[in-house]
Figure 1 (cartoon, rainbow, N blue to C red):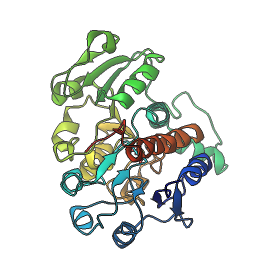
Figure 2 (tube, protein in one colour):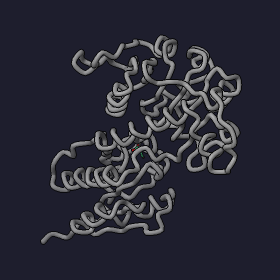
Figure 3 (tube, helix red, strand yellow):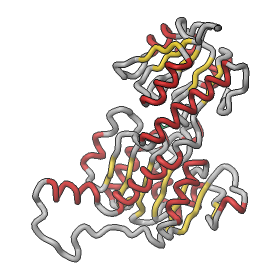
Figure 4 (cartoon, protein in one colour):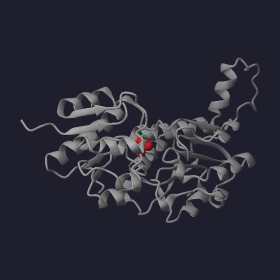
Length: 321
Ligand code: DGY
């Protein structure tokens, strides 16, 4: 029997994932479940053949420059890989994979929750009932924005964007989208393509972001673009905090131009942006888009599938570099 390959798992992945990993590999797990630091990543690279990091472990160019050549593969437990300098990893000859597909529905569900919650005053409503402050009812109390029949703008029609569009169709929303390339006609299901973000924004009563964080999409939603949204639009972000100029969104919320926002992602994570807390029309969650049991198992298994393929001398299905 050849020696088992050694893996480092810096976060506490699902029980099923850890059981399978321990069956097939020698595994070092950070049971403390604290984000792996640059020093830990570098130190571990001398002890392991592969790693299963999450988006909390940052493989910057500097970290990658100091990795030990023993490390052969970084099998991310995430679809987003903005925590990895892919060019540096490629140059170092380290294979990188991610976990697409398996988290699309869970993330689309959270986007739906945020859209509904933001549009219908979930934060204020919950607080009022919870704190025993619900002492009157009026036809003008907690009046929100209706989704049924409204126009939904989706930026990024990848797997998550399409899963979200499918759920929004159940609300009879009129779907518009911007994507780098237009979907094939049989994938559009009646959604209206906008070749540029600007024209999409102009029709988006609700706007949901589903594109990756790259240098091209940094602050994609800035003050100029927010101004293009119809008055009283609702903004949802389950992708990455880097996509939104948070000060510009705060200003738009303050002026009322943006009626409400649902945010699962922030520029600074963990922690978020305390300035949003002053606005009860902002429904916030702590980056839990993919946090369902089924999805966390599926993400872990997908990362292990990629490792298994690589160590068997095959091409990992989700290889990025
Ligand atoms: C992802 O997979 O990119 C999610 O944001 C969780 O990391």
